[in-house]
Length: 87
Image (cartoon, rainbow, N blue to C red):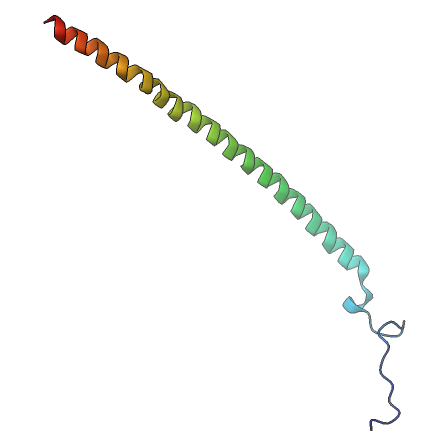
């Protein structure tokens, strides 16, 4: 057998802490990461607004004239056919 060797208790105070107990450095790194995430969130919101306005402008400048042509072309054909019948 293994003898009288004891296994280290991971919950005991004498066990080594991860990151060598330098929690202040971790806190500062977490703060920096939180600031970067906040900046990223603001950028994403700006991009989302830009895409929304691009969609609105696309609808305004493409689909509305297309809908206008939907009504304008039959009127033009009707007028053109009336002109041809008069001759």
